[in-house]
Length: 73
Image 1: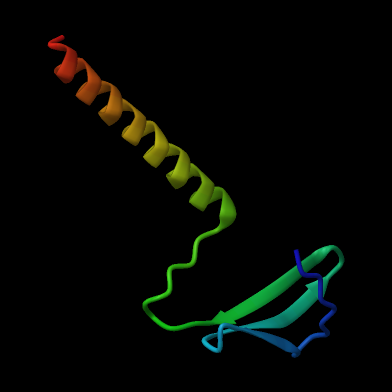
Image 2: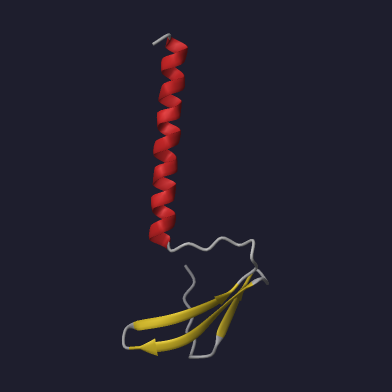
């Protein structure tokens, strides 16, 4: 993991297409702004993790269904 110190108004550029800028700092909360191309998908990590978990569960049940069909069940 990369750790950087940035002040309000300072930015970081990722892959030449995504710019992250520190917008505001209040106590323990930091507000961050992002500029990115329209084709980029941006999700909060907890949403991303939930989607990934649901996809794994769906793929697992599809695999089990396929095995049951193969066994003749």
